[in-house]
Image (tube, rainbow, N blue to C red):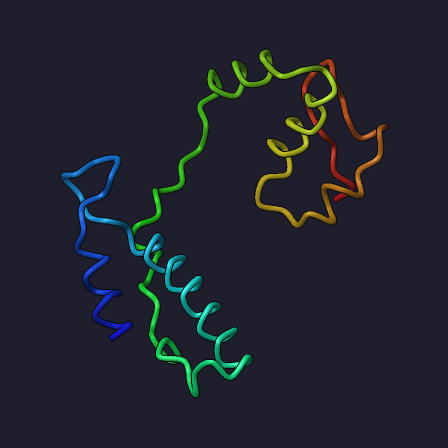
Length: 123
């Protein structure tokens, strides 16, 4: 019964764009809500077992938008529009892209060059 709802819901048109169907990620979140409610009902002995147990989620990866790099112009517009207290964080994100958070968070102020918009790593 839950599997049938899952498939039915996936075929419904999207409210924002009726030309496409509801994304699998949306159905997955709805299924998680249902599973949570059924687990609650089981713990309260309202039902013997959850009808949502074992229902598989849709693979969300193919639906995700492709990652792309910002252009230099886009970066500059974001930087100029940002309040001063966020500019260091923006530089940090741009310069440490692809690195571990600990690397970015362990930077010292002497490694941040605000005039040239460069972060020098300890490497």
